[in-house]
Amino acid sequence: MAKKDYYDILGVSKNAEDREIKRAYKRLAIKFHPDRNPGNKNAENKFKEIKKAYEVLSDSKKRTAYDQYGHSAFEQENINNTTDFSDIFGDVFGDIFGNSKTNQKSKKGSDLKYLIEISLEEAITGIIKKIKIPVLKNCNYCNGTGAKQGSLQQCYTCNGQGQIQMSQGFFTVQQTCPRCHGQGNFIKNPCFYCKGKGKLESYKILSVKIPSGIDTGDRIRLNGEGEIGQNGIAGNLYIEIKIKKHHLFVREGNNLYCELPINFIIAILGGNIKIPTLNGYVKLKIPEGTQTGKIFRIRNKGIRSVKRNNVFGDLLCKIIIETPINLNKKQKDILYELDKSFHEFSNYRHNPKIKKYLENIKNFFYKIKI
Picture 1: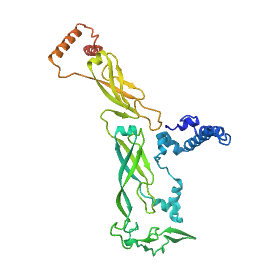
Picture 2 (picture 1 turned 120 degrees about the vertical axis):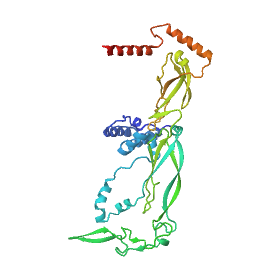
Picture 3 (picture 1 turned 90 degrees about the horizontal axis):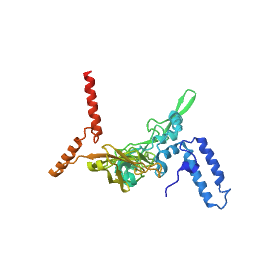
Picture 4 (picture 1 turned 45 degrees about the vertical axis):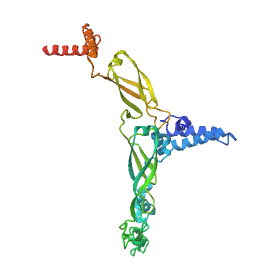
């Protein structure tokens, strides 16, 4: 069952300002609050919907993600990180005052990126893909310490504290120990298997849910599936989508384009032809006298939007009139007779484009003589 649009739930437009959203939420929350509707299950469910919609739309980051990906933004975390201003101050003052939060942040594992190619059909329907990605895991032989048999040497510079006291004028401040870099210990005898790195390369299999309507360049973020840091905190894994070239359709946004070859008889006389769509074949009426390059738009036969489940793109078909080949003598004689009948009329009423072309040539040479 399709989830309701958060803007529709609050009764506001997509470009509504924050104060409009807050005002709409207060009005509806008062109306459907359980205390004002005791025992009314429908009112309780409505209140939950309103509360959820407001939680997303009142948060600028969540609202941006929802506008871009719809409800699928919260099925798998695909919201890009934003700057944490506390980290900025931590970077400036952390080394002097021994800010442990900044030190831990710097030890977070690296983010990983994985490019996955899917077919247009898979992008249309959505799919769960299994991927195999290389990762660095703690070495089992040294328990991730990087030291032989896991035995680390206590730092003699800071006596295992990771910090040293420094006098600067009237002040005594702490600084990260330059010998052990804040670890409190160091590797005296490196592990033979991981060469003192504490990690070995391995692989893991992940199942990635790819939502319907996703397009090339879209990214899905999997929190904590990146490289594991020194303190055990892993980075993120970013799945970037690339859709393979399709043999029939070209995608632009949620619209699909295709070339539709027809024979010149149908182009001349008109008729009905079957064309493929995502939901099977539909009939398309070709008017009499259709020319090459004519584009027919079939509404709502494109791709469903990843942002809004009930919105579909269109299918646009470009007509290509195919010139027949490998004609036999009888067919050629018929065409010769047809061509002869055309020449009986000197005003080119059967070929208005040719007439216009000849008139333009005539005018061109006339102007040159002048």
